[in-house]
Amino acid sequence: MKLPVQRAKIVFWLALAALLLLPFVTDALLGRGWVRIADFAMLYIMLALGLNIVVGLAGLLDLGYIAFFAVGAYCYALTGSPHLALAFPSLFPGGVHLPFWIVLPLAALVAGGFGVLLGAPTLRLRGDYLAIVTLGFGEIIRIFLNNLNAPLNLTNGPQGISRIDPIRVADVSLNASQEIFGITLPSVHLYFYLFLAFTALVIFISRRLEKSRIGRAWMAIREDEVAASAMGINTRNLKLLAFAMGAMFGGVSGTLFAGFQGFVSPESFSLMESIMVLCMVVLGGMGNIAGVILGGVLLALLPEVLRHGIVPLQQALFGKTVVDPESLRMLLFGGALIVMMLYRPAGLLPSRVRRRELDTDEAA
Amino acid sequence: MNNIAALPLLQLSSIGKQFGGLSALSDVSLHIRRGEIYGLIGPNGAGKTTLFNVITGLYQANAGEFQFNGHSYKACKPHVLAQAGIARTFQNIRLFANLTALENVMIGRHLRTRAGVFGALLHNLATRNEERAIAKRAGELLHYVGIEKPGQTLAKHLSYGEQRRLEIARALATDPLLLALDEPAAGMNATETESLKALLQMIRASGITVLLIEHDVKLIMGLCDRVAVLDYGKKIAEGIPEEVRLNPGVIAAYLGGGDE
Ligand SMILES: Nc1ncnc2c1ncn2[C@@H]1O[C@H](COP(=O)(O)OP(=O)(O)O)[C@@H](O)[C@H]1O
Ligand SMILES: [Mg+2]
Image (cartoon, rainbow over all chains, first blue to last red; front, side, top):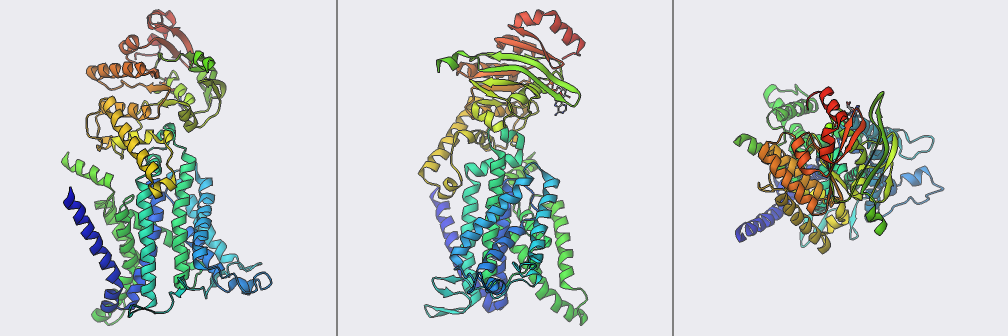
């Protein structure tokens, strides 16, 4: 009994060390751009883990999930940029400029509120119908952001909001390199560590929820809503809770995104992004945290690998770019999903239960 | 207090339920006393399952109301009635198929336990103790209903008879006053039915009132204190099993309504 625990500890510390060194190794081997890509990958992982609560645990197919990412991002964009000062000089003469650490929990709450707001009308819907309505809600949020620049310029419309304050940790701006213990940490490295901490927190919360009374009630609803309610589960409240928790994860990720990028526009919150996040959940293994993380990493890296790999490859082979990497991305993406559904329908790392079920099927 | 204990546990008053033009239940009144095993029989389509759905809140009755444990219920959500102490099984087994047997029963403990999101996140002493108690109770209930396979077996990988018993264990986990069983012996062989009978007697001896829909006449006769017969949504007879069996109306309903 003692050995596996010790081994798990060793693995944990090794993995932690590897993750801490990752930005330096990546920087040295592949260049700084890839550290930035890793930062974005972690934002996606947080999103995918949030959606996993809604889809993977509670079984509510949500196709408009990116809306909560947008809500978080715009919360920080509005309160952390000069936009409000420019749009409403009399109301906010100096802008709002709330500190990031105040906006973050507020944004999580606002996103959670939107989760409840958008979840409430869908409580009686299931499956395809739920998917279509949530898809509509996601688009509505994006269209609002796109058009709320007149008559009052709330969101600055399609131009988006720029000059968002960088995230500050203990009065240190993450937008400039910092010297710590004689090691120079560039901005992307600082964000890497911040996002790593948040990802760890999100994983921790996901695990705790999954193994709790609440998590079991969500799974009961996923498995059979009628039986769940007959067993005394208040399905309405628990579904709303799932929407709210998932939306909060999305809101946190969105806030980090806005601070990291310094700029947000409605373009970042298209339906395609919702589908991307859903694919991360499904591809990796719905309901399994490790699988969802793997799905997030793979799908966040894929377009970049294509962008950086395919163009030079084509140049070398044909002397020109024959296929645009963007369209190739969609092609590969669709192909990968079809192959997955055929050969690994439960995902790359199926959830514990599904894996067990496959084992037994093989044995039988 | 005394007052409530003297009342019947469940009292239906003129319950009616319509589906479009079809009257699935009309003017059904009956009462179930504390501690008895009450049988509900009738040909297929007589409205037995519909009656279960009404008293467990899955359907809202169009007419009438019922009293349970001294409170009136008219249009109530299923979880409210489960909280009040009515637990049920389903005619076509509705387990949480991809969860383990143990998890199925643990979910039955949901409404008698409290840990919320903060409990889950903090995982404090109270939550840990509660989780331990839930798992312990669920394990005991699996044993109680006679499921000897490991609790980690997926519900859908249990045998048919075990699935029916798992549904009973899950219902018992809600600490019910009334356990409503919709054809629990359906598809069971003679030995399984015999052990089901012993289980139901044990459940009744533990103080839980049982409402039983069943087709197996031998089981009904050997087990029930009183029986009601439904036909085309109407109660056509009620009484002790021997009386009901000889009731001409009941014989006619069974002969006319096709063989059961
Ligand atoms: N949800 C429903 N919609 C329409 N008709 C229903 C519904 N549920 C039951 N019925 C009808 O009500 C009648 C009684 O059904 P049921 O209660 O299932 O009978 P039993 O359980 O006694 O075999 C049947 O004619 C059935 O078709
Ligand atoms: Mg029936």
